[in-house]
Amino acid sequence: MNKYLRKEIIKNTIYIGLILLFAAFATYKIYNKFQTTRDVDYTSKSLDVVYHDNGDKITIDKVTPMTDSVGLSSKGYNLSLKNNLTVPVEYKIKIADDKESNEIDKESLIPKDDIKISIKEGKSTNKIYNLNDLEKGILLESKVPAISTVDIVVRLWINKDSTIQPGSDLKYHGIIQVIEDGSIAKTK
Image (cartoon, rainbow, N blue to C red; front, top):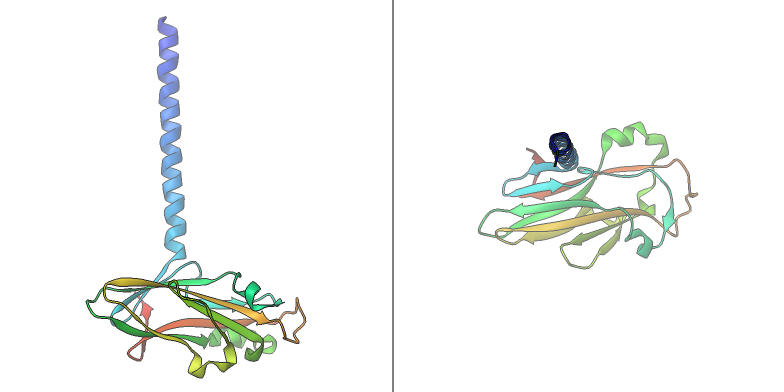
């Protein structure tokens, strides 16, 4: 192999190595950027609460009445409850009105009796309710076993029997609250 060819091979190897190093670094940074902005950490007395994707805010901003089976396949709001204690911890999941957002849209709010909501805890089956039928907004009362994590998915949709016209500008804004011993989980 001549000297010129060897020099070109070394030079190209260095360039390819630098490009691969840059690509790996950029991919790492992009992944971490999205990961940190998507998960929102809260804490209660005994639980670590992580809201994935959208935080604790839930919204319906596109009115499309649908059946329960279609509603159950719609976008969910995911959260995880982690118990680091050696005893089970009781908790409640509550849906509260987002008063700030609802005040802005007060003239165009979806009536609660037109909203269906489901919750799925771990691998259990989905429980479906009408939003206005929840007593004090309590969607679920359960326990996180000792030293374990429970994943929860909440979904909202407009009831198929609703008289609201599809595509209307009506909205609903709520907040998913995790309550332990009467206290709502707060941001860390």
